[in-house]
Length: 293
Ligand code: PLP
Image (cartoon, rainbow, N blue to C red; front, top):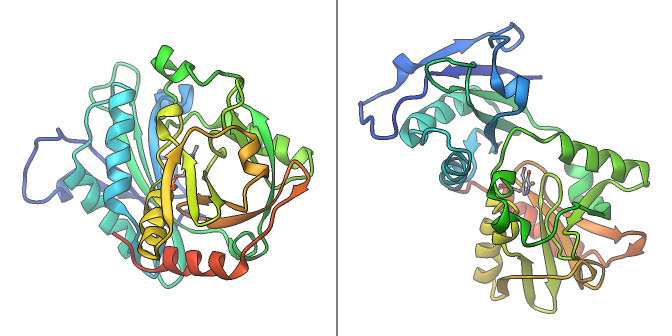
């Protein structure tokens, strides 16, 4: 249940005022706050970010704001003022407590014919993800139905932007559940491994960890970037590669990684089992739960 909500009046990216409190309005999270003309609800026309909060610390705020800026650019939304968003995130984080929370940033195209985009930030307790982190998840591979050249050929598909249009992603997770799995991993129609509906894929081959290149119309995961820094500090090799779908089932180990669930080891791919390294997974999650900027 959402604990805290702050409405934001977005200002220009080059507005350098000393504080943004006059652009924020706290609102009762259980009361109606949006106009029925909102294009975010009518068309899913907007972008978002989900940020993990651990013991009051909002994780990886800089990389999340960079991706918000990137999504805004792809969607022709006005560039967000990152200092304003940082201030809103700090206010939301100050309403959390011990344990894990999630802050959502939402930037919508606004109300039809309205003057500016609309924006808001929410804070809610995170779901308990301990089982996925320790016992792992079974995944099925699903065809996204578009080929690997589509992102470059058809940028209006907005592949690579974190848009509010997640109905397809949620449908893929329901399909995975119908097939008896916990989650899905998308591949392109020409067999290139992509991402999960709400997470990045990380594969281990010997002492090298790889993930699909973000240019293929997938999100560049903040958790994957941070995890690769950790793994290379431990002496492992890391890299981006174009991977065939089969690479997942053939991996020495694999994880789905994302800001709130963190590292969930994959126990099986389309019913073929994968080895889980409990110790390394626990170390990865301990790192991901430590304060990160
Ligand atoms: N890919 C998709 C489609 C996602 O929705 C997400 C996160 O929600 C990710 C990847 C992982 O991104 P992050 O690690 O920044 O949470």
